[in-house]
Amino acid sequence: SGTSLGTAGRIGVLVVLASVTVLAPLSSRISLSSQASASVVQAQAAATSAATAAASSVAAAVLGSDADLDESTDAALSNVPDAATLARIR
Image 1: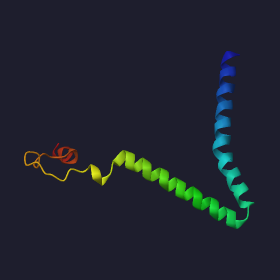
Image 2: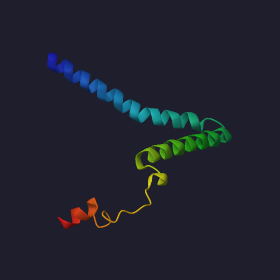
Image 3: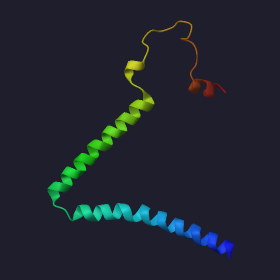
């Protein structure tokens, strides 16, 4: 009884997650297709610009910017191999 209840609960959670994963994108596409084409173009443009802005800010946070680069070279460090070179040597 306890095992079947736990199994039923797990299956229920999986069904809910699967339906949200599949039905949410489909319902957004259906609602977009029912609107006028001009509003769809505007919505897509806004979504694209928002996604691009979010992606660029994430990339900037992870990768840093060119302003972070130190242009001065240190003669003592000029012959130190990087991680990729060390991996090839091994």
